[in-house]
Length: 162
Image (spheres, rainbow, N blue to C red):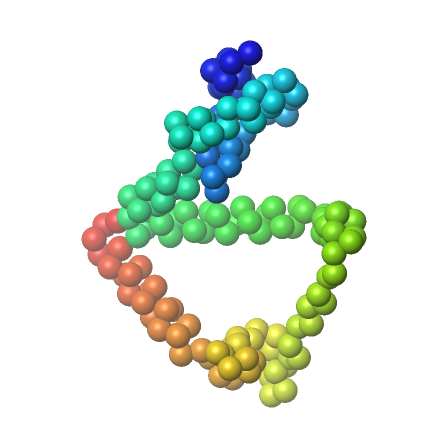
C-alpha cells in the first residue's frame, strides 16, 4: 500500500489529511484508516508534511479575506458552536480521563480569586502586578479601548456594506 492509496481511500470516504502544528491530521469518518494505512502515513510522514495542505495557513488566509461583517458572523457562529460543544461535553469524564492519564504527574490546584467585596461579581481581571480587579467596579482600561475599537470597526463595516 502506497501513501497515495491511503490518501485516495480517505478522500473517497469524504475525509482529508492536512498538516496541523507540523503533524499529520486525518479528518475522516471512523474506521476509514486501517492500522496498515496508519503505518504507511507514519512511515511517509516527512514527505507528506511537505506536500499536503497546511491547515493553519488555509485558516489564516481564509479569515484574512473576510469582510468585517463576515468576520462577525463567523465569530458569533463559532461562539455558539463552542457553547453547544461545551454544554454537550461530559466534564466529569474528561477530567477523570485527564487525571487517570496524568496519574504519575503532579497536578497544580487552581484556586480562583475571591469575589469582589463591593458587588460580589466573579468577573475579574488581573493586572501585570498580579492584583485582581472587578470588571464591574474597576473595568480594565485596555478592555474599554478594545470594546470601543470593536464598535468602531462594526460601524465602519456596516457603512461600507461589508
